[in-house]
Image (cartoon, rainbow over all chains, first blue to last red; front, side, top):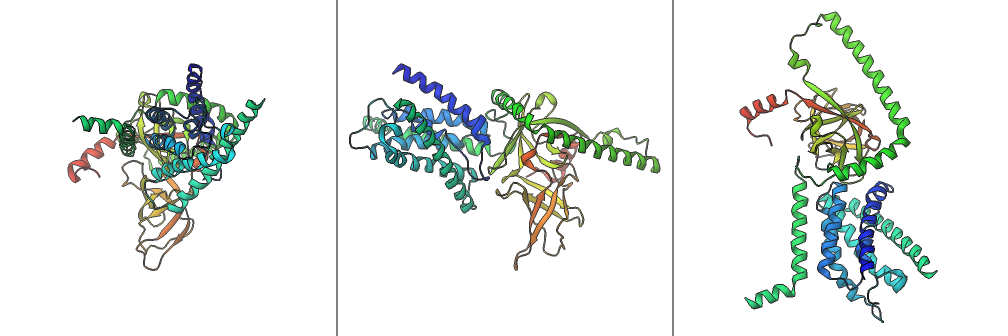
Length: 171
Length: 279
């Protein structure tokens, strides 16, 4: 358990560095952004306390905000995702239940389950993020285009990473 | 009382959620103010030094472009200086007395260490701060045109609101006809910006130059913004709908100059006395 927590703390910083040094500069067609860092919240262990989850989300979002010059925006969306996550996990529990102490990954629960789990939450994150930034619905369709393309981009990268780690655990 | 506490405890997750979200929304609103003095952005020294290291590495790949830009600017400045000298010689203004007018503007050169063009609210971070005399509200220009204004400063870094920020409005002027308008970005194409409030009787041409106007509290008069790319006049509209092609490609921003207006305070306090608080 202790080893796991340390690993999570290291991952916290890895996700942040990857996001602000690499993915921040990676924007496709001026509309598709990659917010891989949502995966950090999504992949925390299943039985983690809701409150702790939100606090981590807040800290994480706040750090991202410093680098994006958007104080409060990413923190707001991540707290929302962290809050919804456990309820969503409870709703879509697979038949055998979750394994105790493991993160809800593709390797543990299969591709279909993982898509059902991650896509809505990532969508909520992107939706609130982009409309929060625009602060209005006046550019609705352009913002929606950003949400959808970014969703595809983020989800693809997330899945690829899942498959890479899947390969490693099999060996 | 006991039941109230029990109720609060029962829904503690929800209340934590609510208070965190309210706090975040408050931060978002606070951060939207012009010239907020927040410490939590890329002018923060730790964040800025991380970004500036990564920018240093990336810069190697665009050194050729940067050099070309600087060479072009140099030659333009030399030519201007020459012309100016000849002009002064011919009208015998060589011994202008009023040093205050001559030294009206100071320029501080700064390197861009962080920049974005794809968000609705884009910011530029530079490696000069209060130590170099930068203050919130100053204008930033580049060799190719207007860039933005200083939003917040730390000791060695500053964050600028880019022209590509849907909240930023700049008073501007059509150079050929002299009509005033406002440029504001629409959040879409990072190469063009909207010019608003040009009344319908004005005869426009594609290619008209747009510059900053002197009514502007931030920019000096006559800084290039861009040229008219297309314009439209809807049947019942009061104003033209104008797209301006920005002279500065914000994706390639590498060096900017911060304009320090030495007479600014005098002008401001005089205007405040006669007109009242600026809006």
